[in-house]
Image 1 (cartoon, rainbow, N blue to C red):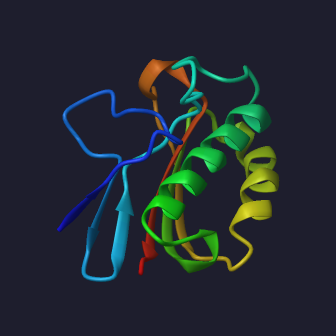
Image 2 (cartoon, rainbow, N blue to C red; image 1 turned 60 degrees about the horizontal axis):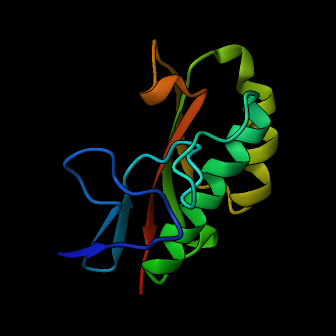
Length: 124
């Protein structure tokens, strides 16, 4: 296994890695809308937060030698399922290959953000 690290995505806020590669598969940890430069939450609406989450995921995928087009499966967590349609608008701009996906509403997310996404993708 290989640990993936990039300063283009937020530091882990617990005892875990940003991503792990095993074989030719990368598993990202869930990303929330933290600006890696400031450590602050970006935005207060689902669209802005989802954009930051996608940027963070893109940086992790790039550091792993992958990209959105190599995504196999995503898992999406929403604080409110009423945000589903707006979240999908942002998500769909990045995951145009339509990987398999689960999307669930949860009671609370870290730092009370509105969304979190993790990805499994092919890596180099």
